[in-house]
Image (cartoon, rainbow over all chains, first blue to last red; front, side, top):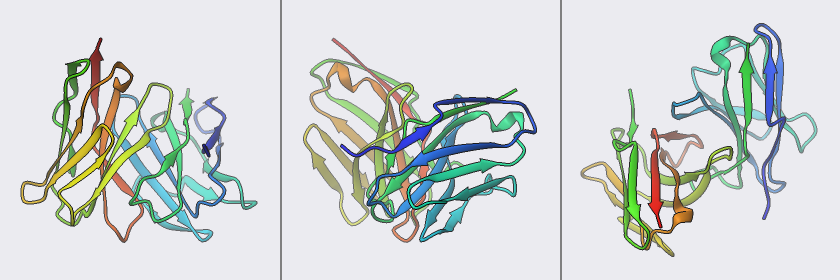
Length: 114
Length: 112
């Protein structure tokens, strides 16, 4: 069964450093998403991406965040200057259609900012 | 503003019995509702969805019921199995938007 692959599975970074979280969505999917889950809290939408541009973003997704699909297969989330409160599980997801019929999520990257 | 709420943080049922997980929403613009299951150290897995034009959708052991007037949906699992033990998230979305709004999750434990 096709999978969404995320790397790394765990990343520890110093506060103020830049991190790039990587995702390989399912190959025939057209819509891509990043969500995050802070420990003990709900899964929160960050950004959706379609046709090489952001289609929607939440208020969490401020100027410190950016997304890119550099080569037609990878989908990356960059956090420019990490803060302690960015520590969370970050999930990439993709869908063939607009997502109303469910996404396929990756296993997540646990980001720990120290 | 918590637009999607799962009021029960946990539920424990006996193997073979019915599990009923509940979800309430406040935003009447939502027109698609989904349930995801999540095991530790994994991403959520899509289970079943329902459009607001329906009141029931069934897929094997899983049935989702939607009561639009009450802004309430429920997931029924019959019969429950120990492998169903996981966190279940309710989510809601608009047809014209891809993003979903998730509830807090309910941890289901199915005892053998």
